[in-house]
Length: 208
Image (cartoon, rainbow, N blue to C red):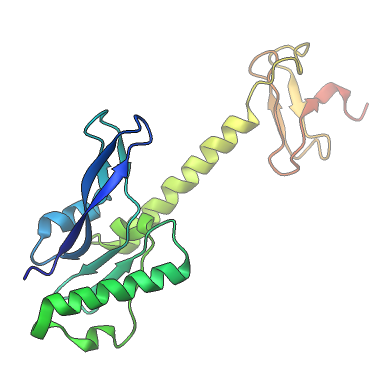
């Protein structure tokens, strides 16, 4: 009996409203299914495509991964919209299923230190050849996205506000003018001090 296990589930497409079926893998033995391991590393194992409109999305399902030959061969990745109690119940259910499917090949000592769990967004990084480097790269990308969104908010033009201040005007933080200073890039732009969370004002109007 194969160790890996999947279920056919019924889904409803949020875009077209049509029902369809998809195969969702819940247990993967990386030794017998290296193709599924590759999809896990790509973060695509539970991706499904609606056959009616082509919309792609990720099915929210748990995953138990068996990696023969490593120090901790079992790894659990819970679904993303479940409670801690639901995660525990699903982990136990999948472990019992894998134990039954493996028969004499199952080893109780695999759970001697408990069952390691990895949140789904971090699973590809945890399975990479250099997990620490992959996690650092993920953190750097997340920080870059935060800075991008923050910069967009700080430099977002607000119609009707500051429209009489011409481009190029020096703007400063009213709390501490020496702390933060920027020039308007275009008329009508509104700038914010990222530390004091206040709108910048024309420098010429500060402190006489």
